[in-house]
Length: 266
Image 1 (cartoon, rainbow, N blue to C red):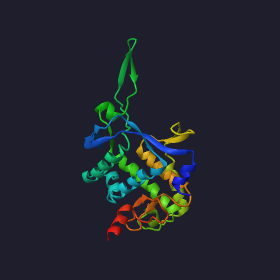
Image 2 (cartoon, helix red, strand yellow):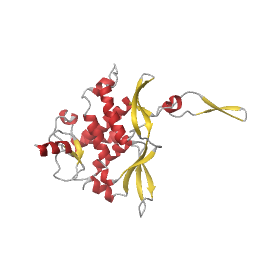
Image 3 (tube, rainbow, N blue to C red):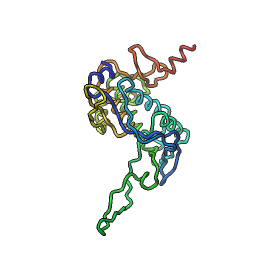
Image 4 (cartoon, rainbow, N blue to C red):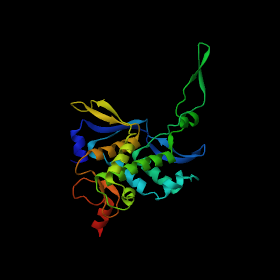
């Protein structure tokens, strides 16, 4: 059963989260960390929903974004020297954010002591998010975003190897000859942190349930989990020409739109 058909029969039919949208972003270094800060905000933070028909577009776009980065980037930014994220690669993230919205927000708490006075007594209050509370900015650490993206792509490779019989040696787990059952165990660990909640929705008659996630990155991870749950044909394809992931709408759909268009032109 296709993943999209599975969701059609499943009571949870929509993924949603609240998202900030900005028409522009700027790279800033705050306390020795690279941040992507939103500027020129387009309205308030709004609910963003992904219906059945476009349930893998977000996921495929993030997987493709990860594949556009250099192969040694993860080691460079997480190694002992902890190099900065290259500005050319930051531009790719910026373009993605303008199209889809801010993928996550910085959740580092503000530990600065704050007090309010009540009946002459000073009471300490918990701080909010540090980036907003201390600097008045909305954004996210680029390194944190990339590491979550790497985590998502790891789940994708494990799914390919364990469930799709992937034999391409570009796949890390194929290259290392990791057994399928071991990949399933690793995928279970990877997905154990999935943060989703069921919410009632009365948008349709009869009412249904929505999967609510904290941000777009978690929605993509939820979409990946539904790919694992679906049986038979899946809605993520791997292009036979370039190897990139793409939305698969037909059983015989074997090439991504870019390669298919190039073949048609030839």
